[in-house]
Amino acid sequence: MWSTVDRLLGRGGRASDRVSANELSIFFADKVKQIQATTSGAPLPTFRPVAPDVSFAEFATMSSEEVAAAITRLPDKSSAVDPIPVGAEERR
Image (tube, rainbow, N blue to C red; front, side, top):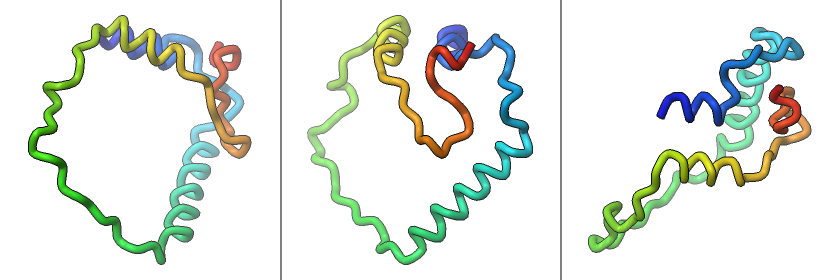
């Protein structure tokens, strides 16, 4: 399973030199501060109970190969303000 996760995440290759660890840390710290500032006045979440007849046992079982194939079919998406590219051609 871990080898599949590593492959899907593009691990095993050389990390990008385009963004330093310090820049990445600052980026995420700023991102958290921005989210906290924009949501500070938001109302508390509301929850509704789940019907008692709903069970996770109703989900179909999938192999790790099926999960990997499903993830691979997902489109690469990112925000223009994110400093880390996510496109397959940029992971190499």
